[in-house]
Length: 107
Image 1: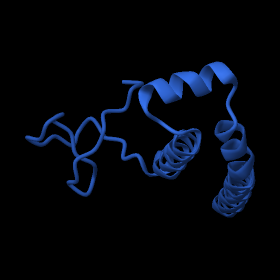
Image 2: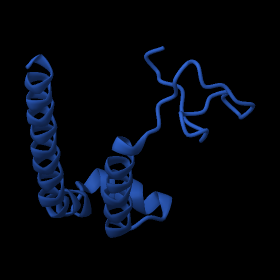
Image 3: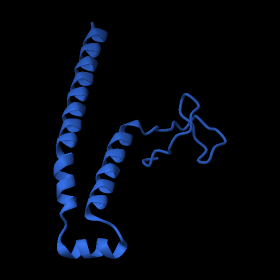
């Protein structure tokens, strides 16, 4: 009986996680046009600084929105290492599949 209760809670937790992830992703997607519009129409001081650097406001906005999208899309896929999986790579860590991964900053 105890295992059945744990499985139900696990199923509930997974479903809740999916709902939260879908809502967060939806909010991000909906906010992209507003973020682009905000960045594409900077104040005069920012516009002058961009011109001094040889950048257009639209290029600046596109770059920042693309950078936001890369950050958001890559964040959930970060591979965290386990301390007992060692390998001779740049940071000395692999995940359980033997792939290179990042060192967890909480260690």
